[in-house]
Image 1 (cartoon, rainbow, N blue to C red):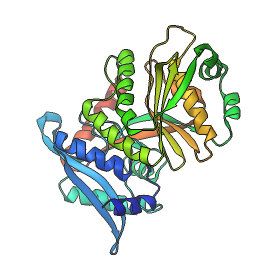
Image 2: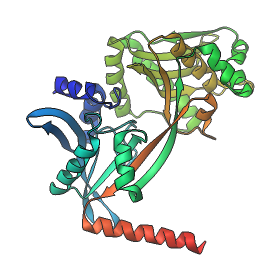
Image 3: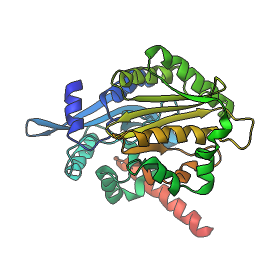
Image 4: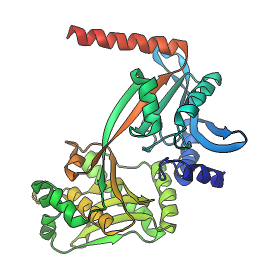
Length: 347
């Protein structure tokens, strides 16, 4: 199955990290038993040739009025609770230019198989699936969230010049205030768990809870170990006076370096922004690697603001849709939209 998956993925424009075999299969092996999910993996054929995949699953859940429905989602996310890690750039794995043809057939088949509702999360708004959904199900848009990707092809010096004065100051110029500092890259498997433990400690200090649960760490450990063996892991620790002060968890795949998670301690000096400094080191490394085309900050806001836009990257929007397939849910969604329109009109 792994070879077949890779063949379909390589023939598509689907994301090579979040839709990779290791990411998808590891997610499934951990969250399927936890959440009692049912595999709904569809093969897309052109005559007898397998040309694509719909990496999905279904589960029973309570909807409004306590009615139980059969919901379908992408492998990699779980919208019914926050138990799962977040996967982005999710999509159907299909041949370029043929999404419209196959998507209509996929949705029809899902309906025939008793799926009541489809929840498709964190889709890149520029891809063919998002455009198809926006055209055919514009009223079913559930949410949008911005992300930022930084073009690394023009050189780091040019990038610094393009930054705003304050961002350049926090990200680069104030490195000199760190004093005795060094960057360490994770290079051995026995360093992975201590790396995630340190990331959890930093996250808990800032947000009040760990970044990764025990089963999430198991997921990331298995994924990271795989990418480490391929030379595609870019996990960095910033030390100041031999003490870890910031962490960047990155994975590089096919010209794109994904910033999965950032962690840092709050510095004593209000002149230092450890998170911004850490990203500065990671972004500089990405520019220095000729194979890296983009440094991707992905979606997600900071604690107080959408800080990522200050890094002067290209804006990316992730969209999520909730699509009713049965008459009951279609009517309910229509009534719900009507109520919202009336409320806005009254205001």
